[in-house]
Length: 394
Ligand code: GLV
Ligand code: MN
Ligand code: MN
Ligand code: MN
Image (cartoon, rainbow, N blue to C red):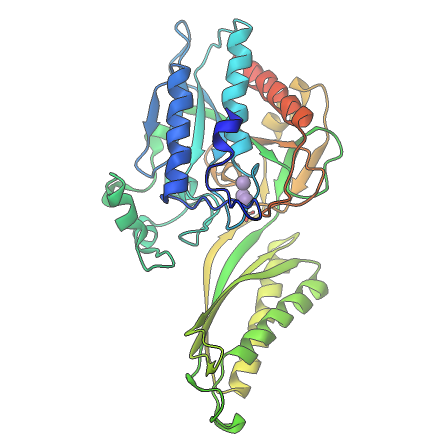
């Protein structure tokens, strides 16, 4: 099952994945999901927001109070193989384990694949789960654009979904008793094969738009320039310094320079800041300091700067009772916080949620070197099966 997914959207050069929602590679991942569900006789539901759910309704079990598991199939640009797909593959594999043992859960188990988790195409992370849980205004979501200027609404319509129907779905959510998402650990914090998440730190994304004036690189005197690049550079350095000062992390990993000519002063620069830290105050202070650095440099260069918050997620403390139950079902495993965002974090506002992490020996993620050893992945499947078995009977 893993082997079928592995080549999809993989760059043959550096091995990085490019699976942006509703692009051919991600649609192939969705086709793979439907296929895996069909092989297991699990009916699939695509909700109004483009999230997929494959259902195991045991014959003699209740129809509601389902245990939801799964993760996402989309990737960041040049991402690793495990971030997202490991949770979906492990969910199907855990169901195979349970069925192989003749388990007869008292409640349904659903495998979910959430849309646009990385926000790599439309900018807002966990868009599918945010819409489902009512954490983003549907009108705002519809109007989000990709790099080619296509709106999320248009892309949904092109894929057979009604853009006017997106948004919270309390009916669907009410069918789930809880969620357990398995995910590759994304740093070096987990030293055992499997761990359980305690919390997700506050994190967000901000867009900085620097507007200057395009002109000739050779003939425009320095004093006549309105070059947006120096203030952009100050913003990048300001992010590093602000993070150091506040005990946070701040990253500028994406920038768009217009028009992008070697011999032309840029007319505008758009840059995205990702900031995360132990508390809301630390993150907010970091962003305020980056903004100050950008504004000071922009005024020195006669450049306009505008700042927009694209998304923000407050600290997530996963449900204690569920977490304790998961840890108990696993006979005691490490419990650790993470600096990475997840659909389970978003959905934890609506239902008890927990996460299992699988060890990542490289400590690298969102890059091709992201890794999990096969034995650890198998331990993850066994752990998820044990947790699902426990929860589906409680
Ligand atoms: C998503 O993986 C994120 O943490 O940005
Ligand atoms: Mn990710
Ligand atoms: Mn992920
Ligand atoms: Mn994530």
